[in-house]
Amino acid sequence: MQLVISFETLFSENLAPLLVKALVVGLLTAVCAAILGVPLVLKRYSMIGDGLSHMGFCALAIAAALGVSEGKQMLITMPLVVVAAVVLLLLSESGKIKGDAAIAMLSTGAVAAGYVIYSVANKGAGDVCSSLFGTSILALKSADVTLSVILAVGVILIFVLLFSKIFAITFDPAFARSAGTNASFYNILIAVLTAVTIVVGMKMIGSIMISALIVFPALSAMRICKRFKSVITVAALLSALNFCLGLVFSAVIQFKFGHQVSSLPIGPCVVCFNVLTLLLCMGIKAVTDRAKGKKALAKGEKNK
Amino acid sequence: MNEQTLIRFENVTLGYEGMPVIEGLDFSIEKGQYLCVLGQNGSGKSTMMKSLLGFLSPMAGKIERAPGLKKNAIGYLPQQQPGQADFPASVKEVVLSGCQGKRRFMPFYTKADKALAEKNIELMKITHLKDRSFKELSGGQKQRALLARALCAAEDLILLDEPTAGLDPVVTEELYGLIDDLNKKEGMAVIMISHDPEKAMQYATHILHLGRRMLYFGATEGYDRESVLAKEREV
Image (cartoon, rainbow over all chains, first blue to last red; front, side, top):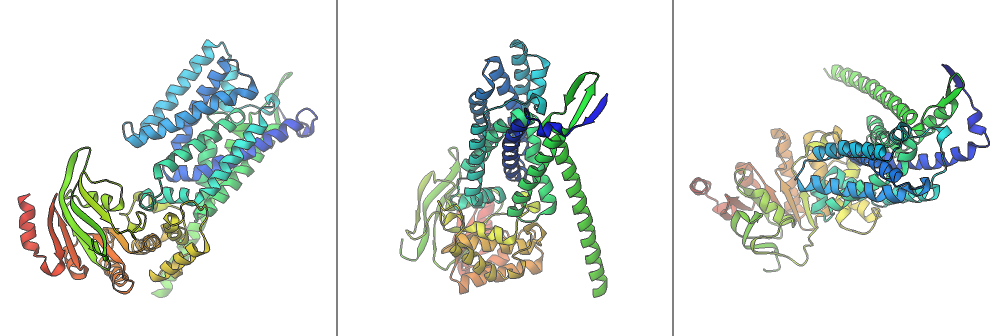
């Protein structure tokens, strides 16, 4: 095996326009996932993203089996995943099946069904693999960029406009209800926005990789920020930065096995950078906590 | 209902899915009153609280609200919730969220909202903490911040659900003093669900004692604890 670092892909005539499209859609998805991730993580709903992304895999299988063209797949996947989000929330709110059990059920059931559908439709392992882990730069096809951009910008706008309500129902649903805020409506809204984000991003990032974009930036930002607004802002920035790093990394690093050239898929690269960022943020927190502890100790001794 | 009445319960029965939890609620809360609600666990205190907040409709009887008391204008201080312990939010953000019921369709808080939050932060004597993170506060400081938030939502009435649970005696005393000031100086009517009959009798103007029905309602002076407890044992 030979490792090749080539900056040519970034500037080649064939790939550069695709890369720009990937950058636009990817950045928007990364930001959407990060800002939605903060309330999801704080509400202990992190697994919703995971459940929905597995449903996304199943939806992609159905679209592939129906032979829907690349650009129109979202017409099939979007309604399926959004309906799954609403059903998931209603199920767990009604208390008939507890939230975590409902999600575990959906995750495994959807992946199993998806795999069966891929097999029945006679699609190879390559299709299964790319819908789970995302595409590489070399296999990138021009998808429906316009629709993705409209949807992602819509998610961000709704989030910003309803920011104060989202804070209220995340921090204290009982108080929010007493002040006349319909907490279950906003819960469902957050789940639907999450579903939209997952559908927009899953072709490129991969359906099971995308839920990492929901939890990692939120967790990293929560290590280093103390206010809700700054947690959201920092999560969005970290997520955008890590997407850029992951995209460039996957474009630049190539492996040669004899004559065969392969490159890394984008999704796992982005997720790896997110993992590194979280470790870094945990490190920063440990160091500052220690410094604070020492300061408090010194102050205490002085007072004696 | 006279002009001073904020909420009136008329022979109300409350319950879930056709099963009554508490019956015969017949009382009213008037402007400036300080009502303590006593009773053991399972006596129907929290069920009654839900109906006060409008989460639960009565199975029988009638709950009347003063026309001036809008449904969202009760300042509510819920029991502490475990999820809040590590929540990243500044005190200012928490207090400001009390204004959410006021302007329902405005996406952002206005200057008036911010001024109201500022005023209530001052009233609760936590101005020095307003930029601090909520999770770093002590138990008593957290309750003051949440009380300031309740005041942002409240116009005439606040509803406190065991506000001193888990606080040490000194901090408990301070919080009672603060609530008493709100009642006497600001004229805010207070309903407090409490597990502490001594404090209730010290501060409240009225007592409501529940035990799956109304065991006592009236002025604190007329509350004979021994005979109410005897009634409670009969139930």
